[in-house]
Length: 352
Image 1 (cartoon, rainbow, N blue to C red):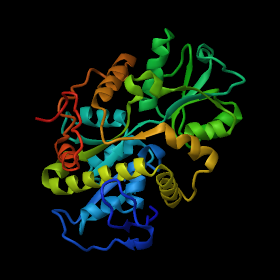
Image 2: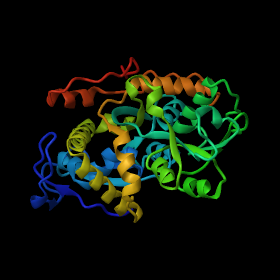
Image 3: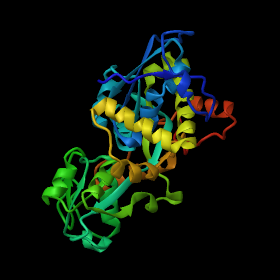
């Protein structure tokens, strides 16, 4: 993994890092109950809290002498596997893998401890083939992965249109083509797909290739908000090192405040982090339209996770899950209270 510069400054809540006083974070200050904390995330704009929080040193600052060890993943299942296997302590991840990881472990593997992002998902199509939503019928539309968050959302939208699609094969009134986000732009250019229901920046990459946004998923949700990225923690790590988890959450809350107060600088920071991780930054034609469609939030939007689980059940991809205890927002609400912010809800799915 590429090493990101960890920049430390005296940043208050919602303040800007002082570019003239950036220094390399050293193992100074009081060490917490763990020597290190391993944090996983995707090199994705919907994981901006992690990208910026690591890039600007805002999370490390709260950890003091405890070392942050970042690790990137390309898919939810591999991140859950790392968490379950003890190779990862805290992760930024979508709602579907959070639900699957919790259910498969019978409620023993993880807890959702905070929010990170809402939105940033769009249905983009070839305007020569698809001009209206009804034109989607009979076309080939990509989603990132069988049973992933966007796949479930698209299957639910298809069902609400009254169309039939087999959730396993993707065949039916619409052909749902499960395609890795990395190759979706090439599949679009080659004509192998007619559009895609995908997160940013893939959606804007397709638009840069001539596709058009037909639907923004946020318009389908109350208040145009739905969880796209959660923060999860190993239950073992939460039990053994609550002080470290609280410090990470202080870092994410302050990171989110800085992002929202400084959108242009935050966008540049996220792009710098992407370049460090992947070797390539996003061009302005991609990142400029993608960035404002993602809402950065501390609220995990718990009610929308329950709705997404209901959609997965309806599609036949998930048996009715017991999600009681999937959230533990105690430490997040403690951090928010200290910042003079209102508490957030677990929608009745909190740990006892």
